[in-house]
Image (cartoon, rainbow, N blue to C red; front, side):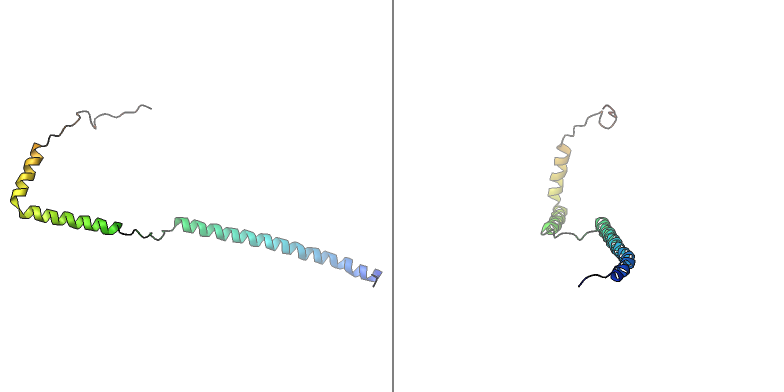
Length: 111
């Protein structure tokens, strides 16, 4: 089937519309990609700025609580026995504290 000149005339008038349609499709894809990129960037920024869920610490928190309980129990035992308090007081008095007289009085600004 051959193309007749009348067919060419109708095709040439429609080429303009086809080019506009294809151009609009390309621009639409570019705009869509830009919008998706902006959404991804926004989600990333929100994720960075948000408070993340804490990871499972395992037995770490329990150990701290156990240590606190042991300290409290140890303090209660010391309060019960006055002999231990006297021994601790003697140890504190016999401890020698050496301090630097220039400590905290000078500022070193050298580079």
